[in-house]
Image (cartoon, rainbow, N blue to C red; front, side, top):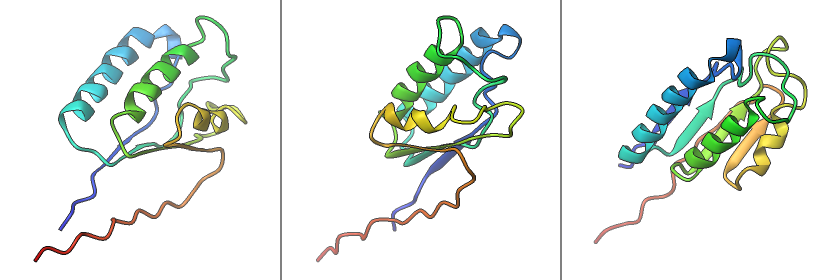
Length: 123
């Protein structure tokens, strides 16, 4: 029987009080874990940002893109949902699906269904 492995994270709060170095350390640990463990799905369950972000140098968005690209190469699919209105601004998440083909990003709450692939029969 094939086991489906899911890693769920959230509340990165990029740029929260300029703590991006601490966040970078945590993201390095996630990448290291994914590198050394077979994980099928990576889920970010909201609050990617601490306040509405503009795409500009020093905003923290570069950090998000850098690590989402790294993580997307280590999992089958990545699912990202928008957090509450106090943190993730409208339309701040939906464009993240353009990072890689296996990144699914949703502005609204979603219900996810994961299905395992049919196992090959052995004789």
